[in-house]
Image 1: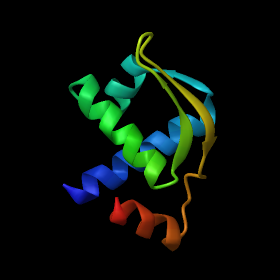
Image 2: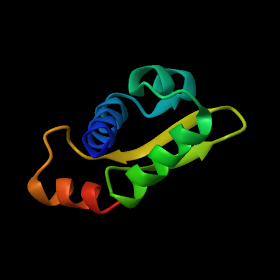
Image 3: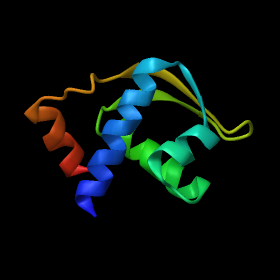
Image 4: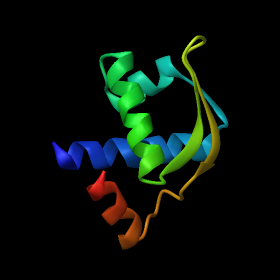
Length: 84
């Protein structure tokens, strides 16, 4: 389960590095998540782990990206992901 979550966070970072506005529908599909609540929980984890920085637009189901780590993360970034 932990490996799946790390992979989802890395995928989130990759998506966030490519575009500044991501519809929830794209995130749900790319991250293999079934519901919006779980998606928002993952996004919040990503913010706490400093994988991304952004804002949730829950009304319009959009994620606005301000910052994303590089897909090739260092050991310190992986440690932060494990701590979340």
